[in-house]
Image (cartoon, rainbow, N blue to C red):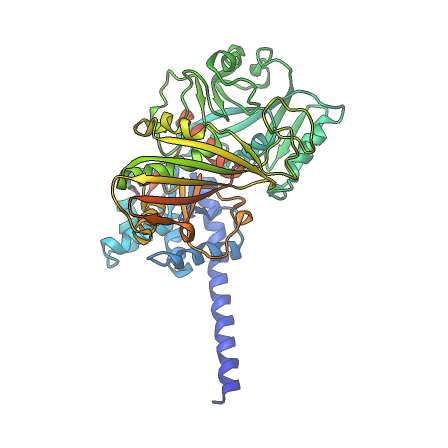
Length: 486
């Protein structure tokens, strides 16, 4: 066979292999959809959801596993999905990559169905989605975070169990307010177009998005809305306005018929619990009527800080945040009550303060008083970075630290909060849409004896919104069990 013939044969083999893998990915799509809609089962690969993905997206999720110690192929995944579809499962979150890793650890000679029955015993033969319950959710404010929360809640709607987005409350800005709100939900300059269909009913003041009917309520006062008039009861109100941050101000929502609890999407003040899911969400009690999801930066840095402190111990450190500009800043130079924030956000790096370092202590009390922090706002619309400059109790080498953080991100309890990447080419826009609270950039890690510097990327809009939804699930007690168990 000539070199030309060999090259041609190799090209044919690669194309045939691609077609085979694509066919397997296409076969997964109805299985993934049916498991979600009929059983409430969410499937993923190292936290990368399979629901609503194209065959190419599914193949890319499998490609990611080549960077870790155990590769997962579509030939491994398809039989797992087929087996899961026969088990009459109750609501669950199933990470197939981690299940595959567990199976290899326990011995792959065990028949697949027997292995799955053992690992998922708690939810087998519980295929009644009603058992999960339903909790009404109201978004008070519909800005950057509010609209992303809407997208995520609509995506999670399934058959209508779990969290259910029922209403949005805003101040009316114009006669065509409803259509403008819907347009902003439909198209986003950073996060792209809404994945689905949106219909506006101006007569009834509703937005129908992928089967989720959202009542739009106009009000200038949080105490004046009677949610029961719209069939909304025992709802959790998510306050996205940032106007009130203490219990007294946020408790105004509790005066409204139909409201049982309030979640703030900003750092809480006073006695309001600041919750970082995956870290201290277990502390939410039935008596906590007002809860905060802390800040995007606090959510980004706490998982990495906890991981490092658990393994090496933190003596002290400084957190520098390089943060995307926000609506709080001016587009061009103009008056602003805050220092420096009156200068153009699109033209300047703006040195400002952050309370994230101090807020860490609310989630990790053992680090109270050990960290300082500051922030620089930069001319990018989304995705920020936190630089953790830490002094440790024990010396550490960069390779060992990175390996520990990578393993923690894959198989630890914080795998939904902490991600890890090792690439010499990634930049901020590569992390738009990342669902983790923070992503450690392994190539940037620096160590010198007992000192280490970690660079943690985070989508300060979407990644944070995913954390907010996780707090909502904890408050509503509708978070499905996660498999494999850690």
